[in-house]
Length: 174
Image 1 (spheres, rainbow, N blue to C red):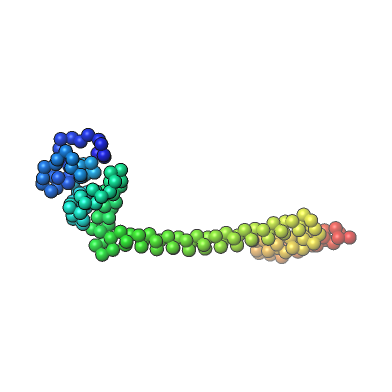
Image 2 (image 1 turned 90 degrees about the vertical axis):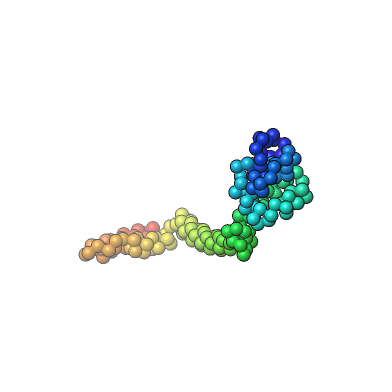
């Protein structure tokens, strides 16, 4: 129940926890429903009911819901980590962010190398289109390296490729 919503006749969680009668203008009622006893207990343990009441009075009514949610989060964090509380969670997230930024920088560097590598392949393709005669020996060497090493047939096939590619290259150059 928030703000101006009508509330049931039962006491709010804060009044139940504090074992007092819940009055119609109870400052806690709009933010601690009767079934949210654990939420109020955590906030009360860390901040105290009196301090929470003072905080809620000082905050504008439209911001009180967010204030209670923030207090609940801070109380939960303080109970989990009594030394650092929310700061421990923030420091952990900041450390993780630095690690991820480092990983991102490495990935960007790898991507830049891949782009540079692919642009050099595109340059070779361009050379092949513009000046195929000068590119044929390069293709022959690539074909020789790409062939699988078979027993006995490898050198014969490589000689055939070299002969035909070089022969074609010599004829086209004339």
